[in-house]
Amino acid sequence: MVHRKPLMGQSLIPRKVRTLNDRDPIPISTSEMGGIQTIDVRLEPAHAGWRLDRALAAAVPTLSRERLKALIRSGAVEAEGRPVRDPATKVRGQEALRVAVPEPRPAHNEPQDIPLTIVFEDEHLLVVDKPAGLVVHPAAGNFDGTLVNALLHHCGGSLSGIGGVARPGIVHRIDKDTSGLLVVAKTDVAHEGLAKQFAAHSIDRHYLAIVSGVPKASEGVVDAPLARSAANRKKIAIVGGSRGKRAVTHWKRLKLLKDAALVECRLETGRTHQVRVHIASIGHPLVGDPVYGRSGKTHSKLLKELGFHRQALHAAELGFTHPVLKSRLSFTSPMPSDMQELLSALGV
Image (cartoon, rainbow, N blue to C red; front, side, top):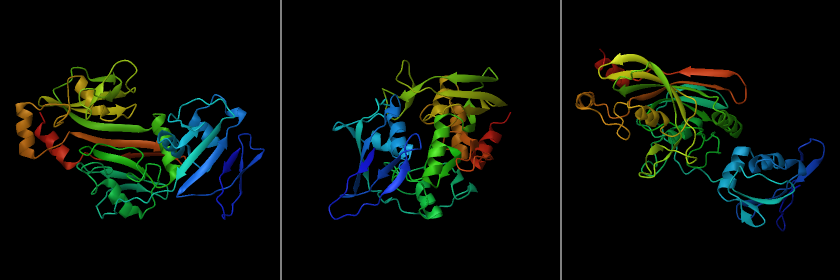
């Protein structure tokens, strides 16, 4: 059963929703105090063995599963007066839980009129071709001038809120100095549907990369778990044991260059810095990568002459199932001019 605690002097607005078996109606009443909505939940016996986030999503259908995951991780869900912070926690069924839902905070990010290349847009989502140098969302050192600021201006506030106030609409991201395709959610329904596809690794993502040296094999697969480096928290590293998350990159050599090669990378998973770390691990770091590679004298001189100051990586293809319309969408982005110039200069 679900009960939202009333306040003195407040009227309740009862609504009917369905239980797990779609037969018995559960009354839900809403109330707020100090900007926080409190929901008391009694799980059903049928929830036994389920993940906590899944059970709560079934019991409280007014909150999406992604929203509940965020609340759980923030300590806003309590069992017996103690926070439960792992969405994957298995429930016994019939537990009494309390969910504290803070009032949505307005995004303090200012809309900014930053030019965007929109590849596709409807009322549910949009696909952006991000230029190199544009940060995806505000963070330390980049509080404005980001893709989020540009999106707030373009969309007029109609972006999903699941990503939090710092990054509304953002389902995934690519590094500041990587160019290419990115999908952005306009609604919570679209955000949740896209997030499920990313979690299921059903999104098609192909990158074009210019790597240092020439791989001997024409293609290969790097299957190596990734995690934050213990030596440098700003870097990602391949790790052993259970500490890392599984990461798989399929690569194919497309063109031979001067002490370099054009490579296509297909992501089976999408971890932070995945392509950069995996390609460096086979001895062929991205040309221009200041973190995971060192350019030789020949490349260093050329990069300086061209004014190329980033890793040579471009998100060239993106495909997914529309989270609302269920149609399959595929998009391509041509290699940007700076990488084309580098490719030509390295041509045999």
